[in-house]
Amino acid sequence: MPDGDTDELRALREAAAAVALDRYAPVAEQWDEQRTPFPHDERRYLGGLGYLGIALPERFGGGGATLREALVVIEELAKQCRPAAFQVFESNTGPAQVVSLIGTDDQRERYLPGIISGETTMAVAISEPDAGSAATDMTTRAVRSGETFVVNGLKRWISNGSEADSYLVYARMSEEPGSKGIGAVIVDADTPGVSFGKPERLMGFRGIPSADVIFEDVRVPAENLLIGPGGFRRLFTAFSIERLGNSTMSLAIGQAAFDRSIAYAQEREQFGKPLVEFQSVQMSLADMAMQVEATRLLIRRAVENAGAGLPDPLEVSLAKCTANEMAKRVTDLAMQIHGGNGYTEEYGIERLHRDAHGWALAGGTPSMQRIRIVSELLGRTFDQRR
Image 1 (tube, rainbow, N blue to C red):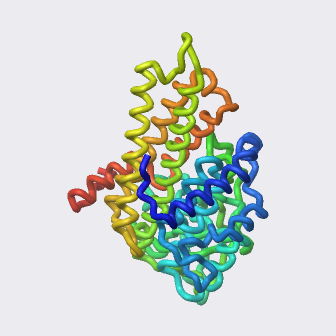
Image 2 (cartoon, rainbow, N blue to C red):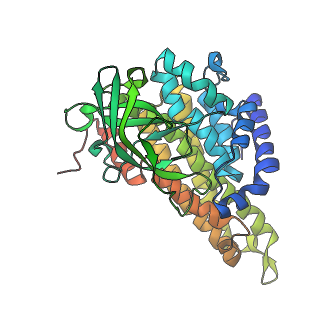
Image 3 (cartoon, helix red, strand yellow):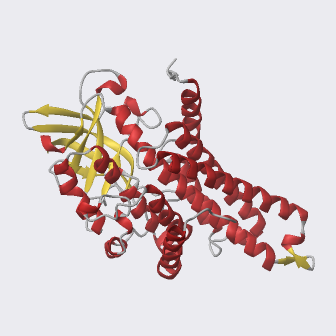
């Protein structure tokens, strides 16, 4: 279907798709089966292609391109191998992008070049055992002590937990209630007092390690303060970019499931004719096409309206909620079209379905996005505790 890409974007898309097919498609199933963390050499390879810094500033080694270019690369890699796409996601739409947007010059100089080259990674640490969707219930603290912050607490569901070289840690920094007391510091993984829980065995997201990150009297230099107490809203506005990356991962999953279903429905025969000749299959394929394309257009609107700035929170929540729900529904329809073959690992449909659920949970669930949508539409907040 028409994609609206410029010639430059189309060339970038084709190049990224070729890397995904030639380099990562042959190993994606094995990495998933064995829960293999994405190899460091492969991360450096992506850095050498310029993908890890495509939307980061040129003066730190990045490409200085727009978010749309980064999302094109994420989408094409994610169709074949989500762990590969995650590297591009994390550097261009994740915590590194937050550091680029609101960090100090010193922080940018220290962290961005290594991330862009693929030598190092940074993960974001927000959720806690009792603070998931209710992020402002977090209890991890970062207390100023002279020229350092002392960090204590435990973060859960941390993608790349135990693998990342540094963590952008959201923490409570004052006695102000709710979001008013929350800020963020950058904590290097090798700082004394940082430790990790055992690797999570997740339904999907295999190849993207997840583990608790534990902070016990961790002393962080004051220059690692990204934003002080009261900056939670600014942090989460920047987090909207990560949600667009998340939406694109879901879009890629849905598109891949749809593409495979189109091919399968024309090749597979039952009752003496191809599956595509059956009206019920046609209805399913049409529903898949509508949902995938609606998602693509919502993401594109949010990206294009953002320009070089931050995206509109309403447009982001509309895109993310639609993308997450679409990926779950479309992969389920794909499994039905493939029948018993869709339930095997051989065709990769069940892997797409497992990963679809993971991206729907990450970065704010569809339920929370729906609440945010209404809040943005009405210009008011809703207290979920009452």
